[in-house]
Image (cartoon, rainbow, N blue to C red):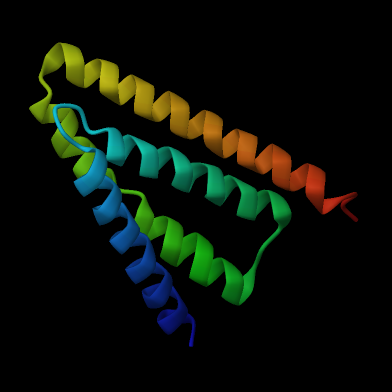
Length: 115
């Protein structure tokens, strides 16, 4: 059952990633940046809330895993060239890590006191 949840979440996430890239990527890969930052924020939130088991398999592993993309990020960074690619890589990593931390902070605050 867990494998099916991961597959379902991954299918939804990757379809949304494709739609964002198709709509927003042009000269600069804004769609890829957006899904990587949004997926990082959502994953941080899920972890902060303490989501586990089936819900985490569906949303964390499946949806966030399908939504975010390392391979497209790496390829686009290379295609942008040394100067723009480096700027894009630093911006993506910084924003994604900050979004994850923010999501975790929000989730932890909403989860109440931990035992």
